[in-house]
Length: 246
Image 1 (cartoon, helix red, strand yellow):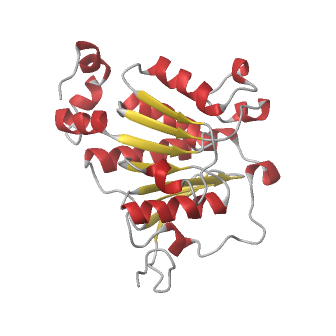
Image 2 (image 1 turned 135 degrees about the vertical axis):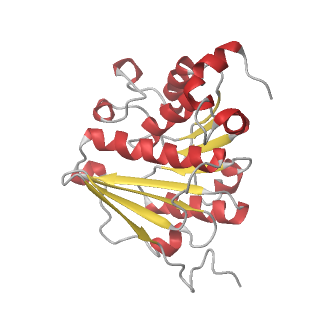
């Protein structure tokens, strides 16, 4: 796989980076990343993945852009209000990097559609905020042996984890909490979305390029109000209904 003169200049800072270089950038160019949700996590993640030169971005979201999104979902602007997020996002990403192919899917990922929607992806990024979708994405990724990068945020706190089989996301969250918090209910500081979105993009890039140590089997917890972060190990649940096996 060769690079055009435009790509060589565009990715110059990657090409001189020892952990990426030409081979790593080629892997990025040939990769397909599935983005589940173009919200607070997915929107900034999509921008950095497109800028990094991911060859194909599959955007999956059933929502439209609302004025309240613009406080943190920086892939959109006022002119996008009322448009499907995947359509507005596709335009933004193509304008940012015309070398990236965008596959928009304006629909909700469900148990019935999850396997088809993640098929062919090298990495899946989940930035959704409901547990039914998160569980469906996790099960589909485990079944297809696709690494899953998960990001979540609320109020001033964010978390990022990478799941490459066992333990899986369901080991971390066995069931939906009865009083699950959402940004609409409890609020979120806008810049936190950029922090967490950038983190999940970075983990996806590391997985594809083979750089460094991904957060596999670990969860990074970021406290934006205190300016602190810690990483904890995720233990495999011996009774996990998804990854424990027969």
